[in-house]
Amino acid sequence: MANYNIIPLNELIAQFERLPGIGKKTAQRLAYNILEQPPERAQQFAEALVNARKKIHFCKDCQGFTDMEKCAICSDNTRDRSVICVVAEPKDVMAFERTREFSGLYHVLHGVISPMDGIGPDSLRIKELMTRLSNEDIKEIIMATNPTVEGEATASYISRLVKPMGIKVTRLAYGIPVGSDLEYADEYTLARALEGRNEI
Image (cartoon, rainbow, N blue to C red; front, side, top):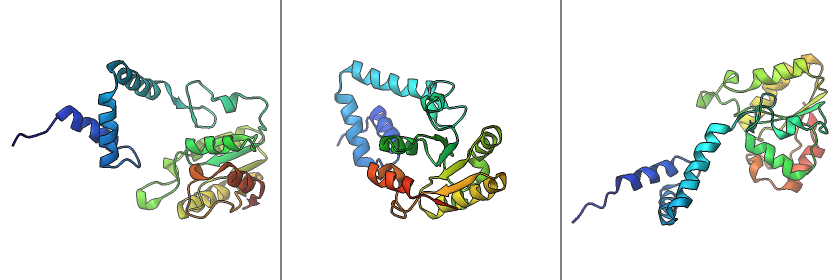
């Protein structure tokens, strides 16, 4: 019996499997889908992937993703520059922007404190946040990390650093179920959580 082992296909499947939430069967389906596309479509896909990785970097202010020096939100002079919403991941910014309820700025930590995973405060963009708070006229920061043990620990840690600066620190109200991720919350739930935030 012949050995049905196509090395480039296996390598493509392995790359898809490395993505979060992609199991072996989904990785196989994606790989076969790429192979069934016309060569120019596969080329466009590859170029978009390489371009995104090459051109997208951190915004110098909020640490979110952008292809410019500052992202569109930080560059928007109509935003309320006295309030910063602190989120764990860039995708959380998009979740809040879909609500159209928040008009302030953001700061992206790129993770949460998780000693079990070897992630301490120095692994996050907390230093950059503290620099912003020192250099800008900020009146409130909203801690919008997920309502998990790690998210709560991160919010408490940052709150302890910020409070001596005389800046109000609030936490999202629990319209968001404990243990869930912000990216899966609907616009109404996020909007209610923003409205009912509490000081911590």
